[in-house]
Image (cartoon, rainbow, N blue to C red; front, side, top):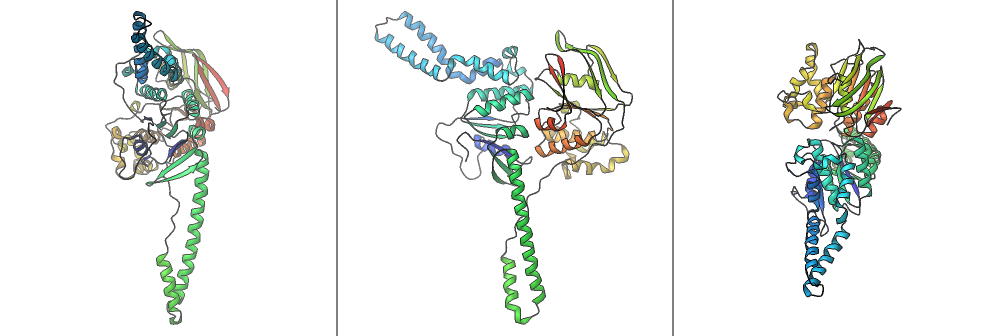
Length: 503
């Protein structure tokens, strides 16, 4: 049961049934048995992980469509105003028109109909859209921005029950913080799937864990769930150990006295006890990737230097003239609003994009490996997982390919899957596996945690913490940034601001 403004987070491994459960609650899937019930008149809003918008409506028109009945009421009120101007104020007809007008006006006031565009402006700005975006057709937005449009629709609907499947996947850090505030102040009941640890900690009042077809319920947020789960598992381990000691003790008595006729009844009694005993389960085990980046050669003190660089696309400036030096061993996080230029700066550092002006200098012993946001930049969709790894592996290590892929949770026939059918999380794991052979002493990573579950993010975080090379990264995971960054560079209105320390 979920209700009374509760905020519930669903956690579990990939494939454990989180999205399935959300779809059942949303009414998109029918359970094989059992019932789903809501109070009469309950409204439900559902955000899927992926969707495509094909409409030619502009963003503003599309979001106004959420309030179709209120927009229709506004038009009817305008028509009634004209009618009242042309009708005798003392007539029955005028009274009838006036009564209808009053009813519509009351509904408009009650539901905020006079501030629709203002409300749309707040939501779209919070999700990172600009004023000019409001006039763009929805179908022209990229996939990530279309997901933001779906989220904007949902927030404007203000449903009684909100179901969110990975709502932060396509949001930058500032939009995530804004969404947190919006959800926290909303009276709606919430069920969501998320891999963002801080997002779950800041919002969840209960945590539902799905594992091997069962649901376990925990009070509190994600951190509280981890603590309670470990306590529960420790109790299960102790109970299992105590039972095993009891079984061993009984078995020793049976073995010792089996041939003693005078104790036959006692032996049979203990045999029946063992046969009737239900073996207590061990705590469930969870699969997670495990790897370490190879330690690199030391390299130069100045790894990458950008001198008097700027960047513009046509007549649109993105980065104002700046100087930047990345030093050996630094761990630098880039932050800023969506579209501020974080990915552009990463590409300039990587050398895959040239600045409009200025010079890029790379230390002579610097070896760079880049991880971009977009899988299609690096992975050939027609190749299998195994062949994709072979592309990066030295020949003398190819015998270890299956073991390496196993460490990234590609086991058995999974290694023969074509890249084109992999999920977002699987593609990210494969790209990380390919990075193990670069011997880079400078890693440039743009949103490396996207689509990774919490456990895999933790493993990546530990691997990067132990890595002794240089790291520049972009991430919208607060915890990931706090634990890794030693310096933060904020890009704001084209300028770079440097802050020592973490996020």
